[in-house]
Amino acid sequence: MLISLATCSWILLTILSVVPARHRPHIGVSGNIEHIIAYVLAALVTKLAFSRLSSLKQIVAFSSASAFFEFCQIWIPGRSPGIDNWAASTFGAAIGILLAQAFLARVHIPSNPR
Picture 1 (tube, one colour):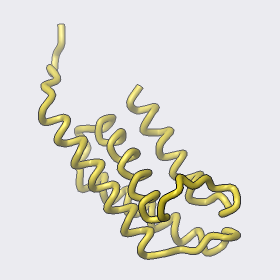
Picture 2 (cartoon, rainbow, N blue to C red; picture 1 turned 90 degrees about the vertical axis):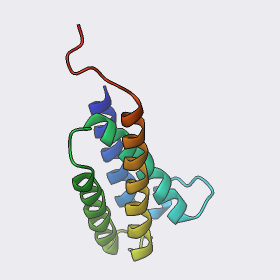
Picture 3 (cartoon, rainbow, N blue to C red; picture 1 turned 45 degrees about the vertical axis):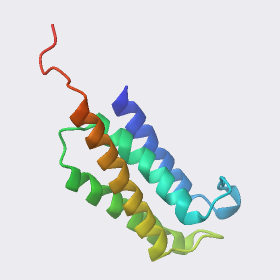
Picture 4 (spheres, one colour; picture 1 turned 135 degrees about the vertical axis):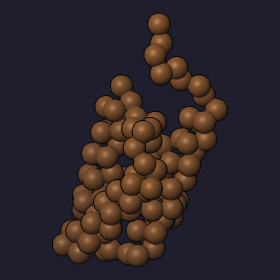
């Protein structure tokens, strides 16, 4: 279930990143805060779903995806790429992964449940 949720979060990040501005929903805060919230949530569920994958690799994956999405926005009506958006996304992903790590460290999950 977590893997499905993580997959859906990546699909949602992709859609929200490449849809024209007039079709993108807003939650009433600055764009960078929206980036942070979206990436915290996606990274949190991704780290929980793929807990054995290196946190650094996951942060690099989110940061790279965000940079790619920002680059793609050059050609999307009403959108404009921004280094600040990329930085907010990367920061959000790092926070989400750290929160997931803290949760996983506190919860003991048996490796071979009976």
